Amino acid sequence: MSINGFANRCVRETLDGLRDGLTFFSGESRAALIFSFEEGSELYICDPQNLLRGYEPKLRAIYFGQEAWCTPFDSDTSYRSYNHIEPQPNLQLDGLISHGGSSTPVYYQMWFTEHHPNICSLCPTECWLEHAVLRLSHDIANDSTLYTGISGSFLREYATHSVHDCIVDKAGMVLGLDVQIQIYPMLEAILATSKTNEEGARPYGSLTFIEPRLIPQVNFLSKFDDTERPLLTHFKHVRKLLQAVEHSNNTLISDGKNIVGIAGKTLNQFNISADFQGKLGFLFVNDEIICSFQDGSYSSNTHRAKLFEVEETLLDFNIEPSVRIDIFQTIAALVHNAEDKMFGCTFVIDLSPEPTAISGQTLIPPLDLRDSEKLQLAAGLSKVDGALHIRADLHLHGFACLLDGFRVANEDRARGARYNSALRFTAQHPETIVVVVSSDRPVSIFQQGREIINQYSNGTVSRCNIYPLPLREWLDAVE
Image 1 (cartoon, rainbow, N blue to C red):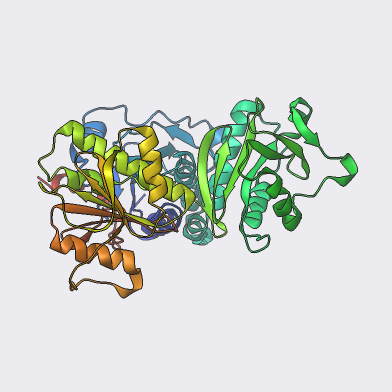
Image 2: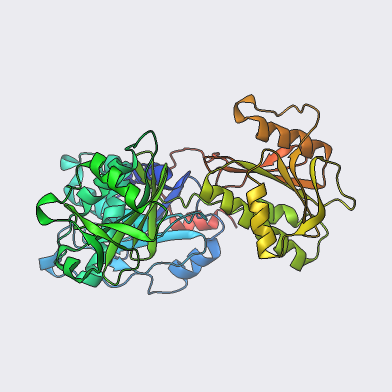
């Protein structure tokens, strides 16, 4: 089959939809595809945003250094429909998520996207790539006369479906094919409840779903009468009941249709649970996190800063490696405490030989942050307006500190006082690093009068349309 015309359009539109959908679900994302339509025909690559650049040696070794890059496809006539997909081995490339398959219409396809560092679980993204395999096979099988172009649009809107497919896969492995709980209504109820206020407040607490046939095995603290069990679709009622398990080790139990009662969070039965944390929440299968939810949609984001920028910036200073690790772990603990409790704060990491003069409340003696009790006290002090002043000796020297400085050219009035104060302060004090945590969880890192932005948050991934190229030609282009 020629790569021109119809086939080219299928590949490009499917890839565009996949990329857009993953960007919505995981943040700015790229996608790429390596494929061959027929056994023995040339391999092609479609990588419009250079996701696979840097992996050339491994790709050459896989596709041109060995014969077994494609598992033999069963071409028995009873399986010649487009929807029979023979899975292909994951390539296990560092920093990437991949999934591939073979079918009668498309002999081989391997889809790739980047593995974001703040991803809850690989499972929904792998389901997304798996569905891209199916959609391309479907479109090529239909030929141009029946092509609708819907695959790209469907992959753009696949977020909830990817979570559904992930849960179904995990439930099937434990419960078998006879899974009675309805996953889509459950996912809809979770989002609707998360958006329902009670006296102006978003929900806190846990809601756990148990397969109906396993309900009798649950050790309930309290069980509701069969005739009075609240319907899961009565979101306002569910929201009110969540108040009974706020900030506790208990959870509401649902069979997928009703709220059955209240039990402890530790359950031996297969379960799906939603942990509501105000505007934010997390979805679990047993104890494994699957995704987060916020503002009426699901996301792969953990909403916890990885602080790569802090780790990399500390490398620029002449500090003992063990001290560098201790500083990073201390800052990470303080940042995650603020994220979890959803308040804004600022931390000054002062690495100058002599203490930087900062106006604030001085502590005598300074608190040794290697002591867990002192670290906990520092976490509490970070709620007070102003910054914490932390030196390289891992001691907290002051709190409620005001960050002064002269105006700098790159200030942004839209970002607030903490952001702009950090820009001004670090511009005048180059041997400091300032970490700013916003109350809605974003974390910003500053040094020498600028914000340090990593590749996952800079939003600079461009859109372009490059047609598929022969893989060998693409590999040779870098030599």
